[in-house]
Length: 114
Length: 115
Image (cartoon, rainbow over all chains, first blue to last red; front, side, top):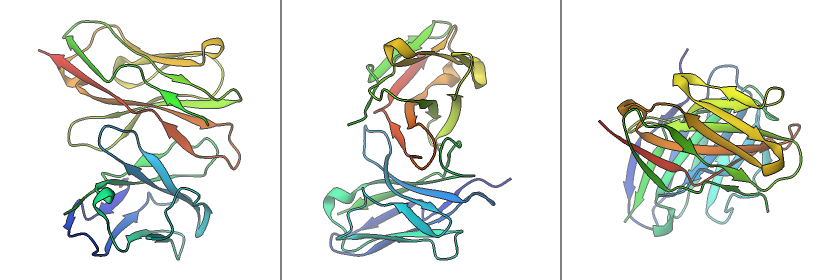
């Protein structure tokens, strides 16, 4: 069974440029998560989807970050415009459901903003 | 605010040494507890989990963890580490199910095992 797929794996952009990350969860997983992982830190949740509904986006900086999961399967996370402080690893995870289900993580996208 | 504390930032051991990584959390209600591992160049993988029942849980690769409710702790142990255990280990807490399905991670502990 394929795991969580993310692309690109690495992205280097200049500040003020837009960037987008894509995630395809494990087939059949209704819940999808985007996490931010800064160097030396654990992952921190940005947004959680139940099917196509964003049920928790309280930690998403909405002035520059947006996300969508239009058909309840794959998802895109966008930053526009990117800032130097956005350099980090962006992780996608999925689970069968929320509320205790084990989350499976993708390899992440390492973003460097110059 | 709920938090997860991992006391050791970097642990260096020789092969065959015993391992214990500390994890404490601050949430007082029902919790689900996890240890995830990230090997160099790989993605986060589940090592073991505790939902209920026996507080001593066994995971993959000979790892185990003990949930001590009175101490709000979920320490990870392995009696004899191998070079291949070199990785970063993250403790995570999930508050009591239902709609509160957000994992809170600790900062991680980097384990280096010398051959």
